[in-house]
Length: 87
Image (cartoon, rainbow, N blue to C red; front, side, top):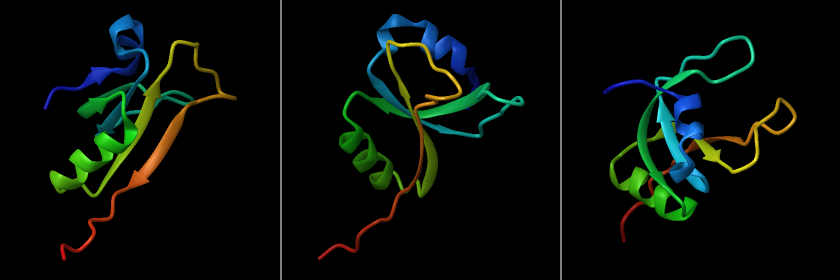
């Protein structure tokens, strides 16, 4: 999979309001730089359902908001997806 820069994602107005599931992330001293986008959705619950269905157990989920990020407001959530046993 191809890596993309987080700045390119947040620089695209079409991505505002979406949650991104990311893997293989690179960081500099303070910021997320390159990453692989696994999936994206404006509905976090729907995104998490698809990740579980794909068998993805762990990834970084990050929100792309309209406001600028800062070190005080990084908008990052680390998620471990637990697959529930089927009944």
